[in-house]
Amino acid sequence: MDSSPCPILLLDGGLGTTLESPPYKVKFSTSTPLWSSHLLIEAPEAILAVQTDFVKAGCDVLLTATYQASYEGFAVTKREHNQSPPPPPGEPIQRNQGYDRTEASMYMRKAVDISREALLQSSDPDKPRQVALSLGAYGACMIPSQEYTGNYKPAALRTVEGLQNWHLERLGAFSESPVTWGKIDLIAFETIPVLSEIHAARQVISEVQLLDKKWYISCVFPNEDLRLPDGSSVEEVARAMLQDGKKKLPKPWGIGINCTKVKKLERLIDLFEDAVGKMEEEERGGKSHDEAKEQRPWLVLYPDGATHLVYNTSTQEWQPKDERANHDQRKWDEEVFQIVKQTQERGFWRGLLVGGCCKTSPEDISSLRARLNDTRA
Image (cartoon, rainbow, N blue to C red):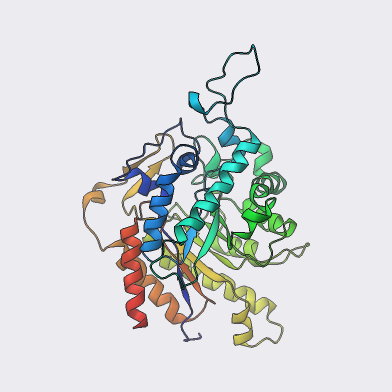
């Protein structure tokens, strides 16, 4: 194994769960199907404030507030009375009508502008930082959300073609605006629970003009069997992400894991390294170890901070998983740092993109930043 340390970039933390916490105390429910993206309509200043806190905490990469944004979600989001456009003469006001595609696209693009504005608040303006376009799984946009189960409906959206069309349509909200597209550095397909959606993401990227943008796919592993919710193994996941099939598809800059318990990371990383190493052996064709490493992706890791809590998608609340929920364990940043340090020292990956998902705050990211900085001193 190559012992040379790989570079590390720090991602932000949980936007939605930070908004739910003091001092913001935003309440999300079935009446806010866009979740944190709802604030693009009602309180964009709150998104800017939280994202600015993550930038000041030291993150290198900031995800946009678009994880659960979708045309369907905007269409079923009820308007406030003062947000409704005037009706044609003689017709009644439609108080609860949703937002049309033009409006939805406008709000989704606004999320990119907010992230760009937040990056300007950095205490180190000369340090390069990046905006990552957050594209949650299709299941994240269902009501109730299904990214932890992969129970996709309708049936057409359980197919590669159906998911490809859905993701391509949403990505078009950004890619069809040259100004917005130019403000995005990284494309993030997040919390993917089914193998077909991995294939769909690669198909989507093959159809858009990336203009040298990096992109990654990260999956969720909510169960103890270390498989996707659809039952796919880590090896099957890695092959879907990286292997060429009948049609040669673009390979992601990064692959990995998000919204998964910290305690599973070490075993999952081992499985990913075994799978990628196995594929390299099958495909090496005389390449040296160093040449093989140069073609490896970055590893993406952003586990959740809810060590003994689970998210109830029906009530949209975090609930205790067991009696240990109130017992203080090692700090989140300490656990994650130790895993990152060991992974970096093995030198397998070209680089590491590390951060937090649900229930990780700016304070958590700041603490992780400090630990990473100490290793550089």
